Image (cartoon, rainbow, N blue to C red; front, side, top):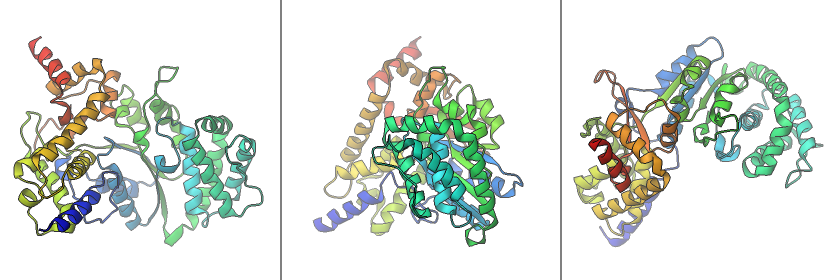
Length: 446
């Protein structure tokens, strides 16, 4: 292969391993990993529940950030559409909420904005826009750019609603002002939204008969302990559950995995119709031996992307310099899809000529390791060592930050293989960090 061919292929491969682009349903890059994720299947686990339920139902979907939830939710969207649902899907953190500082009000306004955008041809939007207009009039002098709905067309007014949620995301001072104006009126907003939804359901686009809303990326909301001692996660999904379940349509919210391990886990189970967790792809066993079915799936994820540009090249000899190098990259990903894609992309960035060398892969791993080293606080190394030994997370708040930051990862055996179905371990890239090794040695000697 010529240098020019290598350079173009490396460019193509670098971009096809973009770790921040969820796959649309039917994408040829998709790999079904259910058998190495504990046999979970979103079409069965959530899709069948939603389509069979005779009443409006409410669901939570969780997992580690970057683990593949968005890709699975887009598959769910397609599945429901094939069952005659009209599905409103949006990633809340892209335009509507600030993950570093999010409250329930922000989510409700985001739902308002997207329902208006998607369904304004199916129902009269004017009562809803009138409600927004009353809030906007109170806020217009506070905004960096004036907000106004007076004298505008319906579409222009809806654009102004989008500007309102954009201010929620971008401007901290404005964000708090909007909340102060909206919070006392959330019950009336939900009532008007439900009137809007009731009418919209009578003439959904494409002759659909049911309506579902999927709100993605709420799992990225950073946990913040409030003055009450409770977290913002608790406030959104538990304390305000009557409001978050207030919309009269099937609702699927993503939720931070750390909340499901908190002492409020039983409350969550009581409040919502069903909770599903997407675990990591199991690449090693709790005994720290290679789990070959999982390793094969990880390599299939890589192969599917490589084959789009170089199907004639050997993955183990011409794309990577050896099977050992490929295996090292796959195991160090911990079965976390985004981490895998990021490691491959970083290794490609350190490569000028194929094959990708073991040195390039090790540089990528070292860069990831340095990031996690900076994430872990001094008093957390012992906690990580404890989990590595026990393979379980104690239901204690001090472990939740490590779970949220992906320092700890959850796995599940397929149903038929082990009675111990769920287990946890330390992210593989952390295990070679000296502070972790020191904590581990200290525990083993005590």
